[in-house]
Each structure stands twice: as C-alpha cells, then as structure tokens.
Image (cartoon, rainbow, N blue to C red):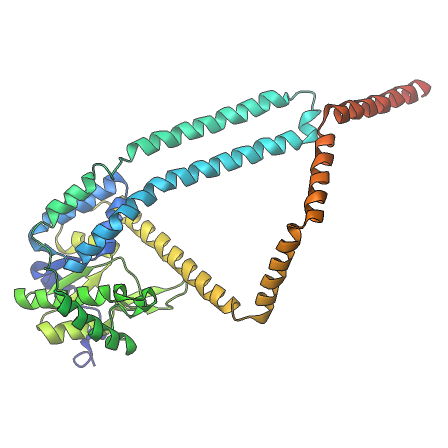
Length: 380
C-alpha cells in the first residue's frame, strides 16, 4: 500500500533526517507576520533559527508581496490592543464605582467611608493604567522604525522569487479557477475572497515547484495557515480539529513535478523538528508561546466562520426576517414625538429622585422611623 500511496504515510525519522540535511526551507506569509506578535525573547529565538539556516531559506514573490501589504495592519493591530484593554479597564472601573454608589449597605455602613472607598478604587485602577502605559512604551512604534522588518529584510535579501508578468498571472488565475472547481489544493478555501486575491496560495505553490525544479532540491514548507487546502485535517471546522498530514495531493503533485520530497510543518513543529534533526537548542517556552498564538488564531477563525455561517443561515429564516422587520418598526416608534416626550418626562422624574429635595425627604422619613423606634423602646 505504501508504495502505491506514499503521500498518505508519515515519513520515517531516517527519511526526515535526510530531508532536513538537504532541503530548502520555504516560509509562508503567516509565519513571517507572526514574528510581530511574539514576545521579544521568542521572536529573537525564532530569528536566530532562521539565521542559522539562512543559506537554505527562500520565499515566493507572492509571500513577500502579502507580507508587505499586511504588515502595517498587523503593527496597527498590536497597538490597538492596548487601547482595547484600556477601554475595558475604564469600563470595569466606572461600573465598579457606579455599583458602590448605588449600594445602600455601603452608604449606611458605620465603619466604611464611601468616598474613601471610591478613592481607593480609583487609585487601584490608576496603578493598572500606569502598568499598561509602561507595557505600551516597550512596544516600539514600528510604523516609524521597524527593527523587526529590518531583520526580515536582511534574512531574505536575494532569497525571494521573481515577479510574474501580467500575462503569466492571468494564465495562473485561469488555471487556479479550474483547480478550485475540482477542489485541487492549495487555495480553494480562499474562494470567498473573490477577485484575483483568491489565487495567492496557488501562485505561491507554482513558484515553489518551479524553484525546487531549478535547484533540484527537496522542500520543507513552513506555514501557520491551517486550512484544509493545505492539510489533511480531522474534524475540519470543529474545535476538535486535528492536523494529520500535509495534504496528500500536494505531496503527490510536488513529487511528480520535481522528483524530490516535500513536507510541511507549522511553526511549532518546525522548531521541534529543528531541535531534533539539526541538534540545536530551542526553548520550550518559545515553542509554547508559538503554539498558544496558533491556537488562539484557530479558535478566532472558527468563531468567525461559525458567525458568518450562522448569520447566513438566519437570513434564510422567515422568523428571523420578521423579527428584523418588527425591530425596524419599533425603532420608528422610538422616534415619534409622543415617545420622545415620555422619555423626557422620565428623565425629569429621575432627576427629581436624585435631587437634594428627595435626599432631605428621605432623611426625614429615616429620622421619623428612628424616632418611632426610640418611643417603642421607651414604652418597653
């Protein structure tokens, strides 16, 4: 069986060891962009690995193009995370103080000064904000001076494929369309992107095969793109999904076209195998961080997928469409003069409850009850 269907079997350790000794290492856009999302220590270790094998690394032109187009978004996204955390802290702080303000057991507690309590809460959140600002300062403004990008530029200088002509790209797009219709990997999972962007993975794949032919070398391809047009996956689109092998059709096509071996890793398994077959040290903490980032992205991608599928399904549900219609009608009613007048009266009523007049009235009622309690005690 293995002789007829080798693409469905794991390589042996001896086969992988030979592959690691002689191969070209080719990296996907996802692997390079993830360098912007690791801690400094993990990023430096990953870059150190790439430097040690720098005479055998290469990327397709399409990967370089995608890296440069997506890089500003990744940098901005990292900066925006600080703002999101800051907003969340402020939201929690305001709710906390609001709840304390409303809590009667605090207001009338004999040993708790409500104002002092609110001050201490404010101080605690101020310390949190200071810590967050310090963390933000440690993340440099990469839009001005990108030290990570400079390292990447040096690593892949003269190690990148050439740009295809417009005629060649048109030819590849047409070939990609036919392949996608038959679910031939890679790239058919990107059809929802529409236009020519959907063919990016296929164009990279063509250039990988061409480069391997020219160099007459086997290839190890490293990608953190974990879709079923790159991998054979158990329970794809489920939280229990498990990668079994590189997609067998990719292995078969590569061997057929180049007469050389092909294998794939994600970043985590690439580092583990680098340690095993090249006998180099790699920190377990770095491997763990790389794995955690990948898992977060898998879960986010699954959530986005489920959300889009669920919403598409709802749009076909008559009950959901009727509910949307009722909501729109209700919104129209909210904007009527009668409703706005009722809201205005309610706001005035709430202001009355928060006024000094109401506070004085409340104190009189409380004092009256206290006086009644004293008189009852005297009678007893």
